[in-house]
Image (cartoon, rainbow, N blue to C red; front, side, top):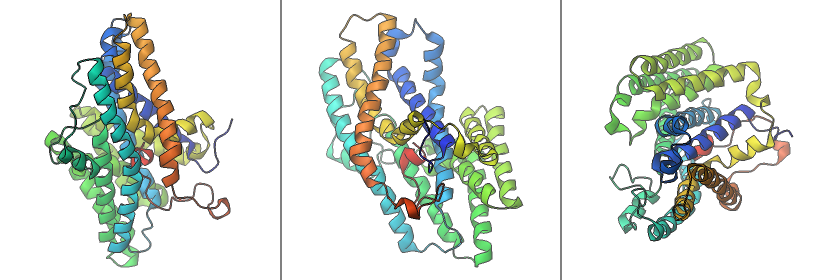
Length: 367
């Protein structure tokens, strides 16, 4: 069965795979079911525990790519327009996120009644809730209420930083705007890869991740621009791959491979055409919601399962059940909340593969 003609099929595939990988990473990393299942599949669970988190790099590159598709650099970006774009993005990020935070608070309270485990958070303070609502929890040093919520704050910071660069480039003369934006992004991305990304203390800021995000931006600019844009993409991809191979920062190698795959898919027409699958499209559409709800859903179901006498096979099956149940709750959140926030245009006015009216929000533009 074919997917909707306006979707980027290859981007959907990457989103779907990355989102599910993150779910399984958290199931393996936090336990407790993975502790019981480990003797049955030690290699797989150890790999998911150690390397599954690198799927976040796919989201970062896709987020930059979709942001690049949404920017109109031919017109200068005014400060009021920048503020409106960030406000829209904040709403699209945080309304589903607020529902997921409520679910997380309830899930932690329920799980605490069923088991003792380090992954269970204490009841939140007012300050902790407010910090989460403002996407400032990591910068202010609060414990996260759910796994992965750090990414939402980083996504918003990356969007704000990119729009600020676009605003700065918009102050230049029209013929220079695209070149200046490319130069600013390239310079900051190189600094991120060579300097900021070496310091884990900076991983609560966009500076740490901008190299990966800018790889996605540079793919879009290389497809839309000329030799300079292709050169910037090549340099950034080489820097990221080199950091992965030489320094052992494999996360940047994953970002470089993702960006190259996007470039090749775009050049060959695969980006729009493959795979044509309704199932992949559905997984992609719900990837942000899945990212939001999978941890609290899995926490409660894991706590219930651990009250039973589990064999390794039963524990692995329970982990699969957590993934399926998380998808079901994610679909509900997507349909009832997230989809109602998405801007819609009449089909006659939006051509296939046209640019989004605003940067894609959250892990959906990313997941």
